[in-house]
Image 1 (tube, rainbow, N blue to C red):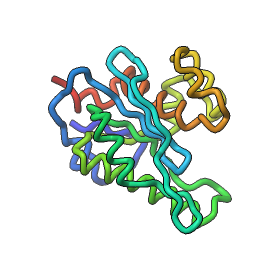
Image 2: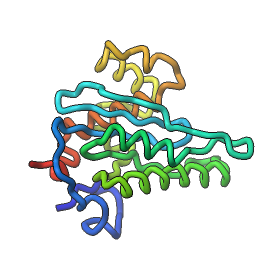
Image 3: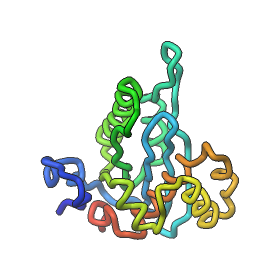
Length: 187
């Protein structure tokens, strides 16, 4: 049974990657993904411990920062998550065509990496997961919650530009605590 976000009108729901369960790993781990060039990834375990985090690996290509698919694949393979929850985002008002396209490319690289490595994944809209975590759209509030949730790692979320790390960690925690993807990693 598919665990897709009901607010997403996905014609492939029930036939896509959310139906590719892999063998459970011990311990189970959840990967949270805040996509984009300034996005990040974070991994939590069954107890909610923050095991790993990293900013999206980027390279400069013709003067522009782009996601490095090989580096991203190496990172995800090394962490070996049980499943992943990716924030489903789209273009924003007044966002340029080139930046919207670049954002879409980075989201596609993430999806391709997860699918190629056989990691079960799902999407969730910002409104759904933030409401579930009792957060607003304010990324500063997300950073504050991440610092309170993981005080030993508070330094990872202390700068304004660390909002991607905070939101990736909170996405992983949302997946773990809300039962998101539970069916994908069930024993």
